[in-house]
Length: 61
Image (cartoon, rainbow, N blue to C red; front, side, top):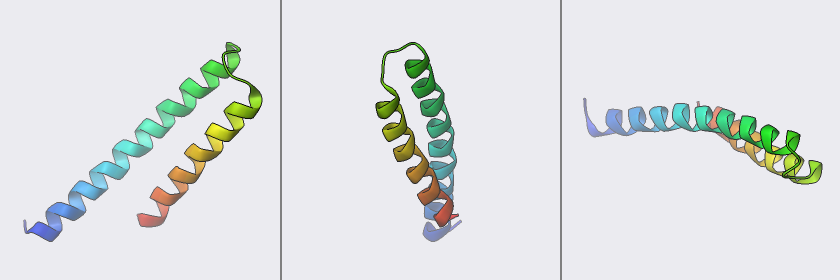
């Protein structure tokens, strides 16, 4: 495996891990909202940020 293959493989693993983490963050965000720790405005703003990041990850795939 050459250096380019290693870099591509590492990037792929990063994107998979980041997608998993985004899902975990979204669940936690919903929990915080459901338990009235954050407002709906805050939840929407943060969820939008997660959605945009996930969309950027999908563009690279």
